[in-house]
View 1: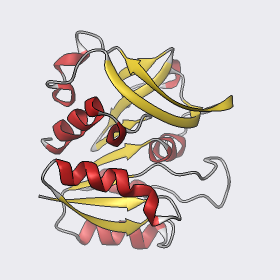
View 2 (view 1 turned 90 degrees about the horizontal axis):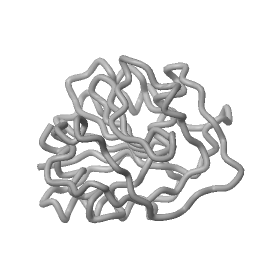
View 3 (view 1 turned 60 degrees about the vertical axis):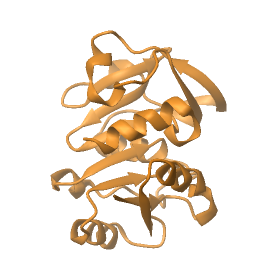
View 4 (view 1 turned 30 degrees about the vertical axis):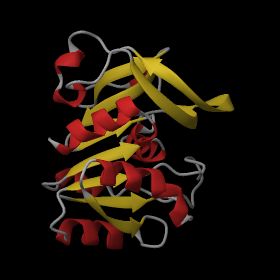
Length: 192
């Protein structure tokens, strides 16, 4: 299986953990730059590719700056599956008009997400421990209260949305490539 990775960093080294996680799952990767291609070019390359699963990485860009890279929203109407990590989740939800909040400090830390019994039935959580050990590295967040259908909240932490789905996109505010539990989640995502 081949997985597409869209690097939303300027630095290609920053996605090595994602590449290693993909390799650990027995897949290979194909990388596109989300910062060197226009949104239109990026969308075209993804849509014309035979790759079915695409991961958009996190990024150090300030999500509210005008010159930030964007996730192409027309991908919502494709037959592909997308995993939006951290910054990429923020890009999608902001473009949907969902208000984002900024905390005083940038959080870089491991923590645990407890998933409700009902949500644990979702295929993304098959075999994943509950609570789920994850890693975060972000300053921005979405309060649970701002997410409404058709965006479906699957898991949160202290009132912050951590995992959600929207159409053909799985949105995660944590970095699944950085923990064992996250890589199990990633494996489940590949089965969608």
